[in-house]
Length: 451
Image 1 (cartoon, rainbow, N blue to C red):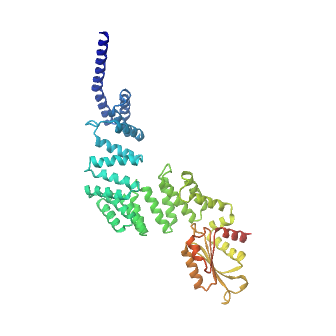
Image 2: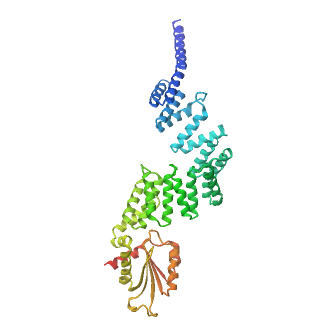
Image 3: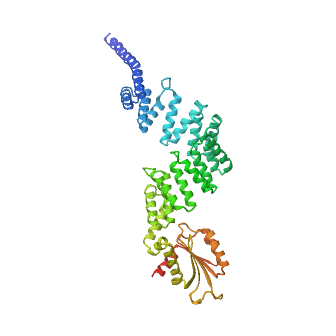
């Protein structure tokens, strides 16, 4: 009998505990909700933690603890709580599934957990198929994953539900632009801007399209407007800078690139690395090599495999130990002309007859030193170009040099390029009256001319 009474007593105590929990837990959860509504996020989190400590499997408590973290800008902790809810919750009127999944998906997207966010949004397109935003967010993720065909398909479903969705039209336009369907892309972007002129992301995509069409003036104006969207401001500054670079307005480009870099306090985003890379290109083209090296070193410290930065640093490391080549690349235009004249006089046994400064460097008409007066038509003439461009020369300047030499009745032509030549350039020069002098040979000539 004693054992029987003990069992009955234990059962009664257990039932009392369950009843008390059933009665008190919803009241406590309701208090958490009230605290959140009143903006008392820390108090709400404290109470939710107390509930979780006593009842670790309570999904409502975990959910509202996540909401409290979210309201207090502690997104990573909120995401952990929401993951628990996702795995354990039985959704009901107090914890409706669709709103939760929207919050959960948005949080995963914020922390770049694309696969998890995609699962949630795909589920939402089934659970809530009449909400266009679910399809739009799905399209955004597909686009980030470079799955453009799938992105385009769901964007179109979004537009079927919401034909006036300017952002969706803009995204469709940009995908079509990337697919080189420029006419259709422009239609979509123009429509997006008409629907909502304040959707400034549209101007970013329009700028990209105009830039591709080499309408740099129109592209610059579009990127100006795109900067009003905080999400696209850095990208727009970088794109506008590249337009200025193509127009050879390097000072304007440098200003935009500096601003783009300053927008990223951590300095680790890929866009920031591109801004530094283009800024280094501006410095290199302006022959401010030390400043270019500074930018490449910062990039290399963040990402050692970023484009050709490692090669650039190695190339200019060699330069730092070669004063003649350093002077060749960094000196003023007038000094550069003197260096080039010295090369042909001291190492090629020629006399400069005409020396002309050019954007790429300089060009010289010369004769053999022993030939005397160059006006005598029997004397051999030579046409020489000196380049100090940062990129290897393609075949186009080689063709131009040959044409110029031919029209000037020159017996032979030479091109000296500090960055060397591409394979097509070297292949074209074979068996033609032109000699290509690359970096190593040029260094030797400069050394001899300077000695």
